[in-house]
Length: 259
Length: 356
Image (cartoon, rainbow over all chains, first blue to last red; front, side, top):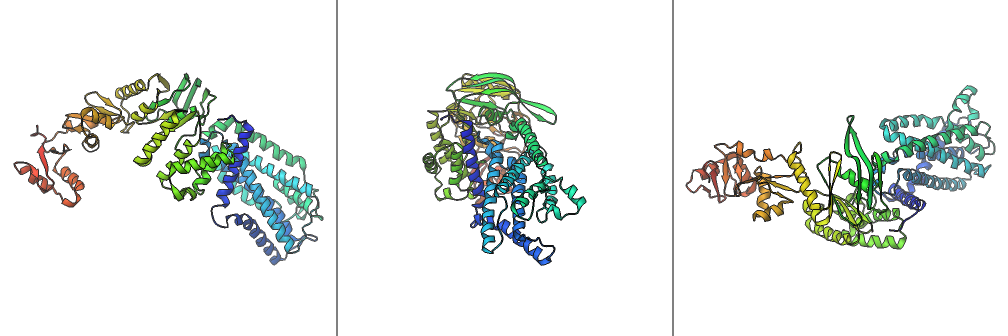
């Protein structure tokens, strides 16, 4: 057999895992790929109708479904990356019999799959919105894309850390499921930080996810801004878990492999 | 060449360290086929996986610049909701094959596995046999320096077993094997050298025959706890050890079935030879039990089967000849007759005490 460089091996493993994940997740039933779009779309429709029905404070200058979708799609992307990573090692255990598949690869391929799902769903929503004549103009497209990619990296570093912990402490995954549920309501998906009372604002800004949401909303909508976003704080939340996660991962890779 | 440099491997069970290897330094020379022996729980599979680079020593290093297969016949790596073809593609992709090579691999797996249309159906509807056909075919479609085989030569039906073994023999012409097997005959056929793992020590032998001998010696000195079959080897009360039933049968010029029957139904005793057989790992004492519990009612039939009493004999033959409705009375009747033959099944019965 020809000797391949480790990067070549990494590339081919990621590619193979990526296709495998897509095939198993969406390719098994008929219309499987359609769920990729229908899933987030239906959530947006439900929330938008709820809001219209209650007819509470509207946001001047913003189409509320667009606001909702921008938050919901990105939050979903983040949550899937973070929470999905936790089971990646145990779920792919059998694959570690193939020498070149490393646990880390399964996390990277999951990140890519989630990103693909997110992109497709977003494109579907853009077409949907344009068809209904919603205002889809973006204030700062570069900043928006940057924010989304950063959110992906943030999710990945949290996911890596969680994955390593969850491998050795089974209850950890269950605890995280409970924590993740309220996070949905505390992350500024259907409201802005500015609309909150002063004392709530100060506390809720400790949640790094709401910072990302503010950044995304602020760079999407003309009438919103990013004045509450603390870039340094977000950077710490990205780098610290990434390095702690990597540190423990490298130390325990062999243990994970021989689970 | 595979080099083990001061390798230690242990598992922690209830706070106690259970050693598989303890400070072992060893070199496996180029181009030999290695058989790995050891009692249940000695860590044969872990050792094999360590050689193949998918498990790791607690301390020390295992070095080799050769390529190793995954454990052959492994079906766990398959994704149930994907088709056989997709699973094969996945493995080919991991190994960085281009499209043309992937097509070639798919074709050779398809030909070897002979599962027809199932190749394009999800793996989860496969039978165990189909799965192992597929995974065996997949392992053979790649070229490795070393093939890792863990007990996979005994899957599937006879036809497939033969086909798999033939294909393997062909493969061995170009690559080597590292194998864990309970079949002494397979080990003799495939391997040149052998190691026996025992309590953290690695005993190396230049000839596989010596390794097998050493392994038998080990089992004779210290019978295993519990009654678990350890290998295909058959032990005889006259001190002979055979690699498997066929060899034992050949030696005593009996049908293999007679020895199997002795092992499975007669507590090991073969009255015709006046010998007791037992399997490797089983406790010999239990198999010689019939000598001690020798009761007045103990029966022997002309088939050579020994029964504790009439009841056992009746249920044995009732099972054997379901359409002849054998009951206790029939056997008792036969015993009372002068010829002691039961007309219904044409079998002679004797009390063991009277039988010579």
